[in-house]
Length: 471
Image 1 (cartoon, one colour):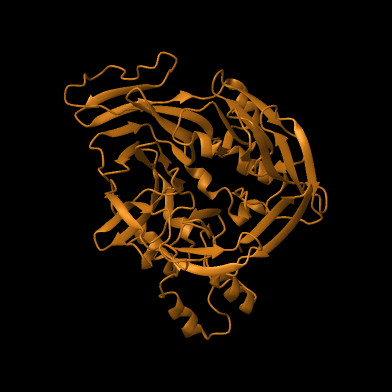
Image 2 (cartoon, rainbow, N blue to C red; image 1 turned 135 degrees about the horizontal axis):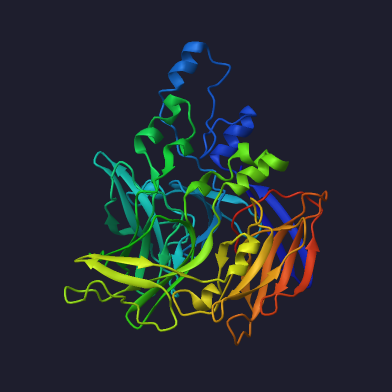
């Protein structure tokens, strides 16, 4: 069940609080003292108090989407919400973590869900993506939410679908966790992690969890789709690369007629099942086997030429950046094949690659930048914090044996002059120490530890967080 955590730094003191999200899933599961709402990797079993015939018929009932918003905090029109990837989000009070209101995307626009990773323009306009499913199959939809309310009680009023993209296979659309955005474009990544809609619709009937309908297809290329943010026009030029998977993008920016797309990539898509409960319950050699059979994510850059026309020559590299080893070659009228450039040296392999990337978002999102931060993964969960320098592809590390830090959150200094003026916040778990959790503060420039605030609780591992200067 989704649990919200808050560290409050005020007057040289740090306080901590946590609350369960009071979702319908939480209430129903609590009332019955068992799982009655199915989740991504968990199929709710029929009520044991019902007779055999009633339990049999329950298999034919449509699985209801969960509102267990356990992925991330997001912001729309100045309000904070918590989100998963279904059509339900919950407005919350960032001061006391109270659950305020359940909001359904499908009441405002024709989508059946949305990611937990929207992007924001400087004026507060929000962009997101969500699928819609109809009798003719699936569509990928780019969503735009206006920055301001016209009424204090508003939630998603005014949201609209900017455009829709047709999947390569409507009955087997791609799964995506997030997307990228530059100053003028939304970049959707259609990857070979596929969703078998028939299996997903019938998963309850078959006695399988939803994740059983998601699979990796190594024979499919990955395709980058560009959508103009102002007009909603989908580029007819498609940018292809070899089969790879991505969950989190680092940044995207435009320069000299090229779009640089930086993201964390794996060479297969099997990592989507890493955090199934049957894996997390393993220990010792069994847990090592799970880790050793999954691919690592590494930061890569793709360069996409923006001005491809019928006059653009084929079979030559269109990347004009002399310092870049990425290639992009027009192979046919509307197809450009891209090969990435590594944003790291060989020494990153020692730390298990990098995931959960973060940047100085307010200053650098959609703009050229130098630094990004993330977790190194020498275990199934992150066990180090990394600061990457794009100038020379070197990095700084914070690591202590037996400690497992969360996604790094960059907080800029109030009077910041340089991109990395600020601090890094991360919640560190210590499984071998009872109630040894602490909030870690690093100098973002030097990566030296500035301090830690110990919390006398045992916290579960989480995915994403945010910083709110006004909470």
